[in-house]
Image 1 (cartoon, rainbow, N blue to C red):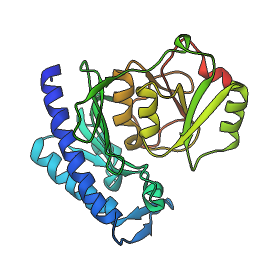
Image 2: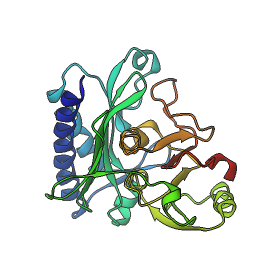
Image 3: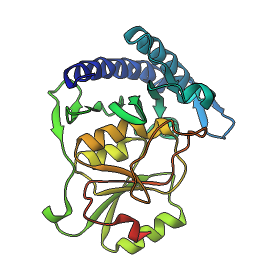
Image 4: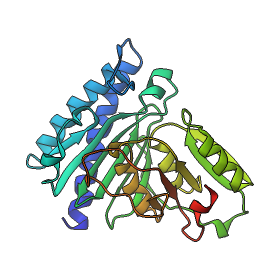
Length: 268
């Protein structure tokens, strides 16, 4: 797929994410059921509605490309390993934030080719914000119906040496506390879902250290956005995250950052 084709496909996917967001909002402002999945994470009516809607729309858009979503993650690696191109979807990233009604949840859709995200869309329906990117087309942010603006990560040399760190509201373990302590001079921006990575992509944060469990659908769309904004999405050994390389769909611990001149792993 050339950059022009990818850009067109990204706009189509953005439209799907926005429409899925409208369906989620119908549930968000009404009544809904909450269940617990086998891993004790919550599942709402909105997760299921968005999942079905996105699957149907992606099948209509690209009938021959397989789809892996959080709610269809039982597909065995023996089958997935044959996929050279596939959609990776989190229909509602940040279900806990959804339940808290703080608006900090997102719809994440990415297209993966040979282990790398080719395009990514992250849409936050309550906030009215979307981030999108595709390979060689840059990263962009759009607020409601306003024109999209291109975004870029920031370099530390362009500002005072006070780090802005973003992390999840529900994830403040001892390793993160040690990391922050070793950073020394910092300020924090707690945030939900893939929006943390997008904060790095738009230059509003320097680093998002994720020192705990996530799955591949949590990160792929945001990784494309961060990398197209000039940033990096690596494990703690500073190696780029890859997708669909093993049976487990869990990610390693990782860093999202804009400036590669600093050895972020040295602060662990």
